[in-house]
Length: 234
Image 1 (tube, rainbow, N blue to C red):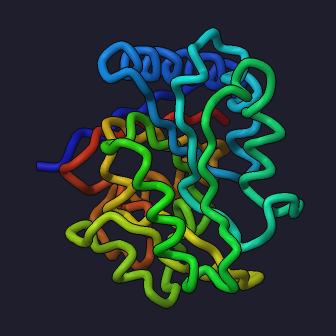
Image 2 (cartoon, one colour):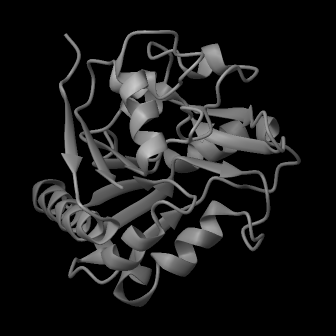
């Protein structure tokens, strides 16, 4: 049987951010107490920005936290579209700057060429990951696993070895690198943060059985490996 997916609904984004930052803080503290370090996988985009700004001020032994990304555009770290830049500017500041960050971009010419290099870097992070933070697009994608993209079937194969995959968004095509579904599920806890009515309806659709190729987030919601908590606000 799949893990039950738990919904956490809040009256507004501010309430959600405060609650979620507190929960992640506790998760990381417990991981550090149990294993000496904690790992956090985060996503880019606009949705987690307020959370990053709240989380960075949480009192934690940040020097024992390792942070990486669920996905990245194949651009330089200083590029305005870089998820690494977004995380460095909004999360890795103040005391949180002492956390160890491992990015996905490397000097390879393409995402496909850089897959092994990136995954070797991520192998320094103990797995299962302690917390994997994901978002969801209005098309049902999560990380850089987009509906009907080339290579999607292999990327969504939960029986595959955890790894990085090269992907391309169908709109405004750009090379991307992403953790595959097997890597995302190699986690003690997955948190899906979404906002707005449109995404709530898309999430409800994804909760129903159907092809993962149409709504890749189904791969996260219909699985037996990791518990999932969904945090939503209007």
